[in-house]
Image (cartoon, rainbow, N blue to C red; front, side, top):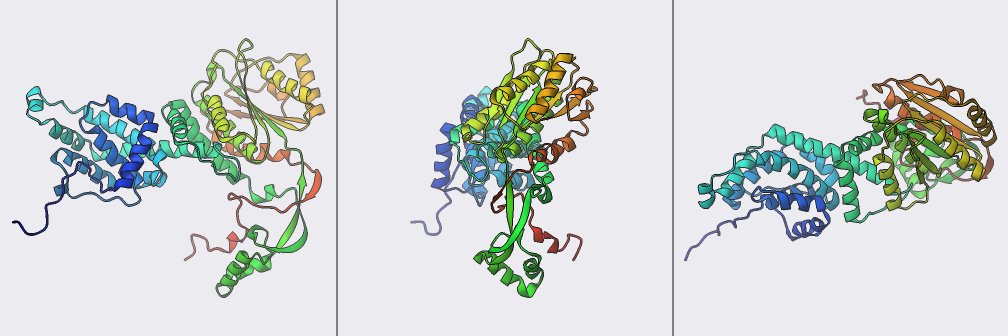
Length: 488
């Protein structure tokens, strides 16, 4: 009889896990078509086990490696690979988007595993005698160890950037303002993978997130309150409307607890505001899809247009995207409404981002469509953004008709010309911007749309008594009491 502690159990998994982790992996794998296909086509031994280890390293809240004595010899290379990955800061940054999120974890696992398997496949295969001798598993371990730390860092960094852009895009378009929508895992994975695996969509998603954040920052509190009027003082818990005397309590350490107590009990003395209610101005986005726009120009135009559309929908403003090309090409019209459900919004988003015509350029056809829509619905008060990189003559009779319709229907037009002079469009546009071919000022212009293009819609209207409820992007008025980063 042998006494003493029993020998550690040998496992092929390098990450300490529990049945709940196995259940999460087994549940999401049938829904992750890309990951399943990757595993089915891989010729690298133990690829399934490596996928599970990567999944656990991204998914688990606390990640812990097994000791070398607990791991089967054929998986020692996996442990070396995971040990180096866990020491990388890029891995921790990626976990910020995947921790306890099976859908995001499945996509991250696919992206990282795909790159690692390609690296491992470059290792010379074992000879037939070695395979017959049972050394194929050891060659799998050696191929995992052959992945350099620098390459591992690059793979995880690329996966994090892709995941960050696509999750922001999907989250922004899958729900309306103030709503949280949980998409089915299979649908969410399909949409995310479709964006990540398409280089053009991936760049649009990346720029969309950047332009959306810049737009939110540009829409400052004074501009948002341009149509607000102070009418009385009441008690409440809205810090953004608190009086200066109440905010002074926050600045004094001995009265800070009193300030928080008033916030919780809604007993702050705050301003009561009247908001001027108005009919939301419709937004038309005409984007050139001719062959000359292919590449960075198309990516910029669609990313900035989608960021602008998202901000407009958040203000209950209907949006119509018109993708145009030559006179012989059909218009692609995508109508977006604030009331669209999550799946509809995402399908329309992908429709705009992925559609491309090629060919020549005609300005009259998309502008005629906008005029016909206004005349058919008798809509008064709309904003039009027109983006192109081409030159196209506009007949004089159409110029007269367009100018008359602008006055009659209160249509305001902003034109953006890329690499060309706005000869024809300057005659019918209220504002004209010109970008060079390198799009050097493109980021600033995309942010400017939010503060200038959208804010024009706030015209005086019928006053309606309504409390202001700032969103998460609204700055707090007492922020100036906080010490600056330079102060000790």
